[in-house]
Length: 150
Image (cartoon, rainbow, N blue to C red; front, side, top):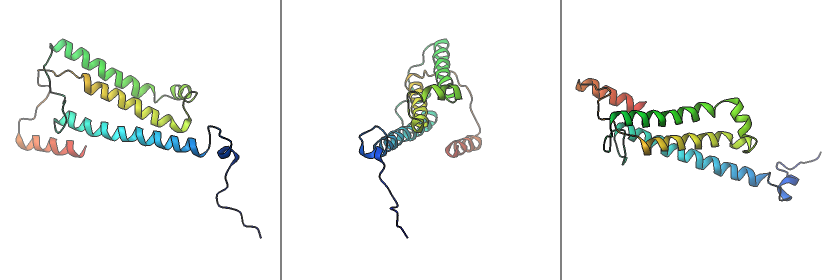
């Protein structure tokens, strides 16, 4: 009967090559940073839309002419949509993984989506017109409750 070690060091770990435990650890750190930024961006998005606890909201700032606000906001939404949809395509992933380790591909996608959202938050133009409104207090409370759980 022979006893084999549960963990055997591979040669990759001892040669100084860019693979092995060190690269897995860097990948873990990269993913942790990407998803931490995602959490902060997601929480900021909730405040951005609801107007709670963030310095800039969907309605804050001096409103430019409505045509400019619509143009800028549509461009910002377009940047997010193109990034979000484009990077999700298999053809883009194939190109990306030529430059980024396959294990880091999803974290890179998350970072790029965060960057697009942060850009949107930063440059969003308030619009002086009311887009929609719930006048009934009970209805407004219901919408707020749904938003809190959404």
